[in-house]
Length: 198
Image (cartoon, rainbow, N blue to C red):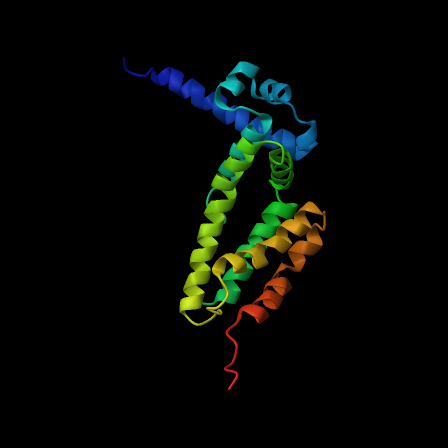
């Protein structure tokens, strides 16, 4: 039996309406105040339609966030690791701390603390792809002699991104974005190759 293209189009329209509604409501009201009922009402669908595709509000918001992010967190490679890190991490800071997905990001991470399935999906769709891209760029800088080879790149990733999340979840806001370039320079002081001790 061949698929009904009209049904497929209707399904895609409903899915799109749900994700758009979830993004809009979380941005305007905050994650905690948004319900599946509210998402369904704004999207013009029934709750069973949402639960057919997602198991929880957090899962809906995570998918909406993923679609909005797309490939925004790709790493440039100009050959200058300091410039590339500054470009990428400043963009991440702006998106996560003061951008449109800020409330969604905080909400999903908060809910994921008590929802192992959501945490797994968050790690697989948001964190791990970004870590892989960052590690690849850092490996390239190590190979080029721009960064120390005795510090694992996984540790470098932690040093670079932990301050962003710390500032985001503790509400430092715009100041964290403004200071991101200086922070990268400070971290790189410890990650640059050291002169020979001889």
